[in-house]
Amino acid sequence: MPLQYFEKWVHTHHADSIDCIAFSVDGVFLASGSMDGTVTKIQTLCFRAHSYPIEHLAFDHSGLKLATGAQRELKVWRYMSQGCLLATYLYQGIICREPESGETRWAIPLRSLIGHADLSPDETRIAISNQHNGIDVYKIPGAIWLKSYHFKIQDNIILPVYWIDEGLRLIAGSDNGTVRLWNMKNDAQLPSLLHGKLHHQCR
Image (cartoon, rainbow, N blue to C red; front, side):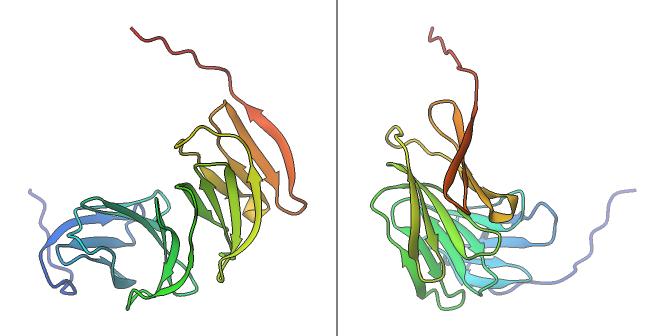
């Protein structure tokens, strides 16, 4: 017997055609993107994400972060318990916006490109992996610089950074086969995790 589907609800928040949809991994949220440049996260809110038609949507594995693509723009959003949308931009830095109006609540302008960023579990700090000289940590809201961990990296290499152990430690990748860790209580760098060297042959 073929599967039968029945209408559960109808969503009518967009003003133009809906061109992409994506479910979170746990199936709790459904995001829809429209030609009018808005994104709706069902059960949460509708907000203007781009000035261009939205072509692509994708949730991360946790369902907390949503990536949106519109022509030459790519943005990653996270809805905070403080009631704002946190977006990371490759060139413009970090911007926290009001979900309904889109107005900027606070911003962190940066002098270099962002490779990766991660919000602490208590949402009071954000760690940013810049593509110039390491990791920068800011207090939020307010965008107050707290500390930096500098190390040499190749230009334009995207390195990941994550909070672990409930925000007690920070872990970051590298371009030289090591994984760096820091104790956030005393700013001490912990012993690095070493990877074996990889040898690539071009033929």
